[in-house]
Image 1: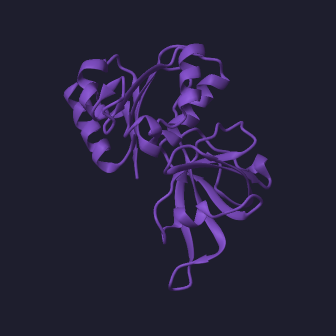
Image 2: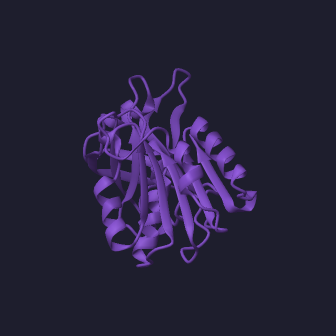
Length: 235
């Protein structure tokens, strides 16, 4: 993989994806030098934003965009002030940031193999990079996504994922944990893995909060998945 770079970037677009989540799109100077693999992350800082000791605040975010996309997309849950994410949320169009990267070993091994994706919340971000890579290669079937959300309002990338379901045969399993009106599966996504996930020797990519990742790994172990089949990322 390429050695990491430190590059200037400009915020060009923001999408309010849900009540708590925003998608940020950055134009990176020397974009051709920022070469990453689906699943990797970057470190973001904002000029002038420092902590109490005077050090520049830096945070790690997974890259949601496909490696061939013009812009770098980050999908960020906005927490209350004085969080760094709340500072990012105040950025206006054309604001300048600094990115360092890419980093991380949570990467897609091959677009040719069958894979299972399991995510919760903004853990969908690095998996979207992978799913988009499959779509760019126009590869169909043999892909499935188990996605845990709180409610219908938290169904991130809903339109895009449902389009991949129709156009590329993505098997899409969604479970809502806090929405009594949800018409699909109700509960945590890990509850439904034993009955809906088959072990056919495929690779499994897991991303989400620590508790969800731990529960998922326990289920996968009980179903006979071996360590070399599983890649995980948690935040």
